[in-house]
Image (cartoon, rainbow, N blue to C red; front, top):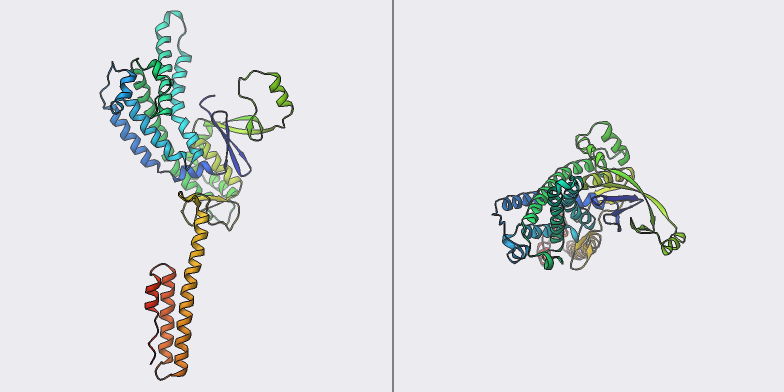
Length: 410
């Protein structure tokens, strides 16, 4: 089905197929992407957009050419710009989420008009209904292309820009309704997903003595409310077995059988994989969460960015997300460098402390009347506290030198 997305789990990877192309991501990519986005803000902005375009005056005689010449007055240009900015949030940092989300609302809108056309009465006496649903289907296809190409003009505009834009406006309004509906569902799911991860996957869970698979069972057996609210998502999932060659689909659906195809197939080693199908992102993420539990992976918050990541070793403390985009450094890289610099910093402070302490001790030994032992021991306690403060970044080196100075020679 064209509106279906397919996900498959293989060991520590997940395979994603939206448009016949297989992409491989680390396990947990979709779940963690959903957790980190501020969906409440996305929903708020989409609702504001809907209120704005629903109050805009509609022109019944405006052409598509005129709409593109005055984009601030054309509903579809306004929505296309918003849509591009929204998916742009995901594209660079969360490609798995981008691939799924960018398809969901657009395809849902297109599928609605496809279904209307397919179910329209094809009786010759109902020609007006057939033409109306056919025109709306064409308008839906035009609208999709506008959203995908914007701010560039779609290639079909040169040939069809002279026609009225009222049907494209109608499709756009329907698209925004679907978009708001999708964002509201993901926002609610995010809160439940966070609760489920804290219960079943977080290494610091109150049930940390149990393995994630055991915690999953406990969640199911005790009717944990967030999990129970997600169970209806099962109804939006189906299963499809597919043959792959090195994680690639062998033949596109509907491609004719040729001698070349048969020869290629004969020399190919195939594997069969189980793909889970859905037109709902939340259903696929819920499924992935359960799979992560059954894999008994360790989920903890990164010591640098404080976001969840999946690890299969107990010692991992930092994730592989990009922390410094200009330098392309990950949280692991940044943490390692910070540890190195902290070591240098601590070493400088330690040398200064030891040098001053040794000098002070020698003066106490040579002239105890001038340098009482008790004063030296008080200095040691104070100096240690200042060194600790320096190592925490609470002062610079010059301030440390001033604060742990020893008495002048007498």
